Image (tube, rainbow, N blue to C red; front, side, top):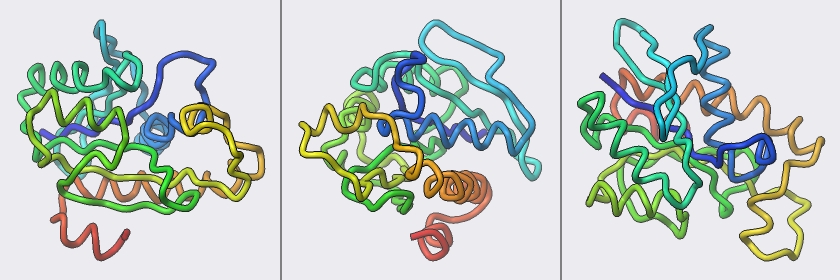
Length: 186
């Protein structure tokens, strides 16, 4: 069993916000696999899928970003998944818009959602796929304001094919080694 968790904030007001890039990748995967988030728990939503013969769960925490660890820990307990079998998909302000980077482990890099997960799971050994959100139109706003801004229309046009590429990386993660993912997608 594999678990792919896209990070974001719940609520329509955050739809297409930079910080919800993880949710956007999960949405892309759901479209690709012709599935939907039909099952809802108190603190997360999920869909059960099968890809190339492997059972997988696609999920979104339904808590605010900074409390993602609580939801991910609950998911892992419910589905019997270890940290090595859980891929976290998140936004990264330090990467150019749409650029993706896979790592099998590491620090939070200042991302509060990932930091919450690392604290809840008590390990840095959590595979993660970072998706760049640093657009050319980066404002001088406070970082917390910037990540909650919606992508501009022209940024969405650039981002859409990269969301598909990030979805492809997630699917490849289900059945391939970390090394092959880093070679192909980093």
